[in-house]
Image 1 (cartoon, rainbow, N blue to C red):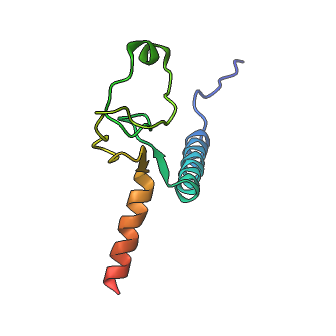
Image 2: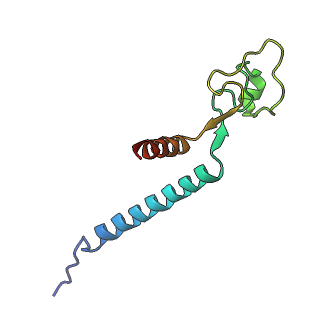
Image 3: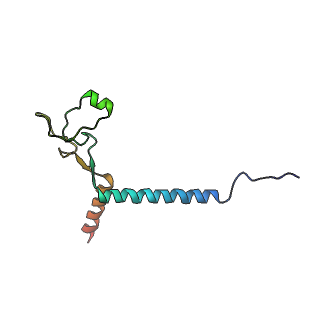
Length: 106
């Protein structure tokens, strides 16, 4: 008499879907909380300096993030953040857009 075991389980796919959905809800709630608490983030183009002046090569190779200081003379403002060094998060932009749509519908 040999014992035959099934290679699949009947409840495994449902549990993995539930686990994935739980992780997705948790991650979405965490991002929404981050957008509510801190709606602005550092500009990716100028690394938060507010200038479009290029950084020295040695700083870029070490991954050094510059300290926010005054712009050197002749350095133009960053076109993406307009010299503030900050940008709205994508989730916050979406929230603001949906809020404006809801208010306009009233």
